Image (cartoon, rainbow, N blue to C red; front, side, top):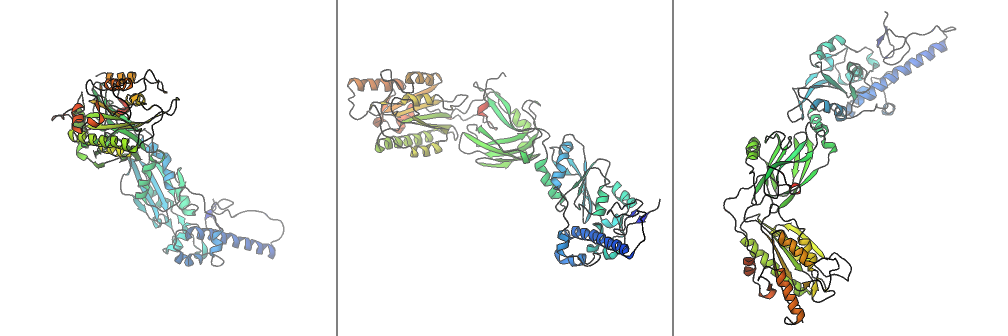
Amino acid sequence: MTLCACPVCLTASSDPSCAACGWVLTDGPWLGAITPDREQAFADELTRACRLVDLTAAARAAAVIEPQRRGTLFGLVRGAPATEDELSLVHPRPTESDVAALTPVLGWLVEAGKRTLTVVDIDSSGIEVLELAADAVGAVRQVSTPRAIAWTDLVSGLSSVSEEAMFQLAGGVGVLARSCQLDVARADRELSASVPTKRTVVLQRLSGWRLPEGLAARWPDVHHVSGSRDSGQLIRALAAHTPLRTGYHLLAVAIDSDGWTRPHDVPLFPAGATAIETPPVTVTTELPAGAADVLVVITTHRAGAAGRGFDAVRVLRWLVPETDTATVEFTLNGPGDVGVRGPGSMTLDTAAAANLATLIDAIPEHYRPPTGAVDIAFAVELCGTDDEVGQRRRLLADWLAEIANRTAHRHGLRVAIIGYHDHHGPLPRGVVRVHEFDSATKRMATIVDLTASQVHGADHLAPLEDALELATRLSWRTPAVPRRLLIVGRRAPYGDDTACPNRLRWQDSLGRLRDNGIDVLAVWDTPPGLNPVARRGRQMATVWRALSLPGESRELGKVAPTWLTDRMRLPKSAESTVVLQFPIIETIKQEFST
């Protein structure tokens, strides 16, 4: 076999055409004599081909050489020094990011243990061999220190001048007029020890460079990528694209209506989810009454799948806000890395993580909220003058302040406010504004914002029956704590003589409230001009007494905050109460067998 050196790129070849640049090495025969014109045409074609090879190499090398050093590079081109305009005619090859190149193999890497991925990263400084594996939580980690191999260890005839070496690696010959070849035997020796016989992905950052392309062709899985090499940054960026080996869950406690408990997992992110494609997840939790802090535990086990043993991904100590429910946002950043954001402050709790099994075993089989806990709802009529409604607001604020002072337990008191306005005509219409249960502090602010509305229709009837119906649907705590409903109004509800436009009967709603263990207390003031001893006045007084606890109905002007608080029979706080250390998931409370 006869080898022939290509006059354009100096590549040795036995083929009719050069595999590197395409120059025809052997051809013919040609008819006719070799005339001076033919010789000149051949020489001109060879000159153009040589310059095109050098311009292409110079354009690619210029991408990795600082602008102030490119003069040396341009002077290497055969024929005449290259210009910037000539180099701009060379179009770069399409590339992808190194992260995109590795993303398809991440699922293979993390789905089973003890797998290793070898990454051969080729750039102008040489070759870096990096081994990656998934750790215990499925995150991609570097196995050992990357091994660097210089181009001078793999290529013979490479110049010691940086600009010339880059020009040669890109396939240029230029005025150097000497060959530069990949030493196959040396490459075998250097790379056999660095690249084990495992799955290998090649990141070729020198797309179109003749010698690096020849080296990359030794492996089947080659990706032409852009950007500079930074193995640390690459591993960090892969986290967002790495699929979860197992699903992630929030550890919570489920409590049925009788107080029986069980650990319960709230799904956060399923197996196979990636951070780059997964939006944040929000979970609304009920905070255990009496708890100054709770644990936010993210696990890989489903509740009950491994007894009461859980593998914790992250454990945070949450200093909970002064509220009864809170919404927490969970953001997947990658395997083993979940961001958590919510009201209050959260800090890592390594001690709790180490003793998680003990803490789970400490969850009581039966749980009742602290005896100092109480749910109180106010239903207040907002029809009347500003002064009239303002008086009700002030009394509400005074009562709530007295109640809060009497409630020793920090999170034991929850307050809801239902404001009701008049019907407008006989048609059904929403007349009630509900402010659901929250802390006394937040509901005190709600009282300030209650606004008066004009009286419409009958001067002795108000849609109190609508407010009572909405009170039956409030989020009263389960398992039940003491429950109280205080009605503050002036006019009686619509009754049998004058039907409610919304077809509600106050007697039905009141019955359901009492059946659910909700004590109702009413205070009221007589409408102006109404004779209390007349028939209508006596009827109204009879209705107000029926609405309230026996003997406890009282006119508004005769009620002091202390009297009212006494009549509401607020529970005393117990000294010894089991406090849950995990959030309660209110929406999944259900009956289940123990």
